[in-house]
Length: 112
Length: 114
Image (tube, rainbow over all chains, first blue to last red; front, side, top):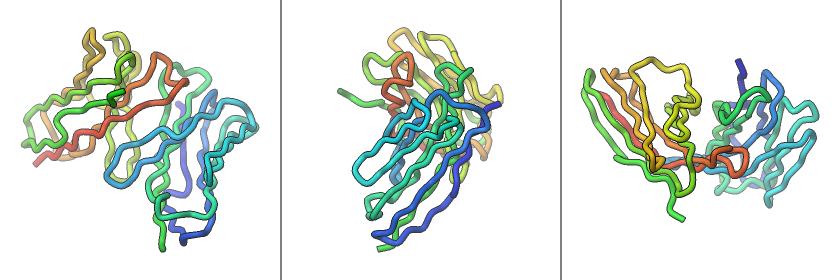
C-alpha cells in the first residue's frame, strides 16, 4: 500500500537559518497537503499542491511538488521561533479517494 | 464559522473499560475522519465516515469502532481499553472531497488509560 515518509524526523535549527524537510511517497500522488502542528495544538492545514513541479510560497515558506509527483519539500527561510512545531505532509494516491496518508512528521525546534 | 468540536478534552479510564469520544464537524462538512496520535508515531488513520457510512478504514483492531449520525456528528468507541490506547485522538472534518480545503482538525481528546 501507499506509504508516505518524511525526513528528517527531527530538525534543530538556529534562529535565522534556513532548512528543508522532505516528504517521499512510495507511489505516485495526485495531491499532497502540508499541515503544521504547534506544541500542544492540533494540525492546521497550510497548503495543497496538485500539479507536477508546482511551487507555492507562503511568506518564508516554500512548498514544492516533485516532477514525478512522488515527493514534496517544504523550505523555510530565516527561521523564527514561531516556526516551532511539527510539519506533516499528507499524500493522496492516484487510486485513492478521500483518504490522505499522513507522514510521521518533522519536529522542528528553533534555538534563539 | 465554528470549528471542529471534540468532547471531552481529557479522559482517564481504567484498563478494560470502554470509552466514547464525540466529534462535531464544521457546518457543511460531511466527512469526518479519526486519527490516533502518539509521540513519535505521527497521525495514525482510524477511519473515515461520510454520509453515515464508513468510507475508509485504517489498520486498527475491531475494538475501535465509529459511527456518524445524520447531522454529520461522529462518535468513536474503544472497547476493552489497553494501556497502549493512551493517546491523543483527533477528529478531522472536510468537505466530501478533502482535496478542496484540506482537513480541519479538532483540538482532540487526550485519553489516558491506567
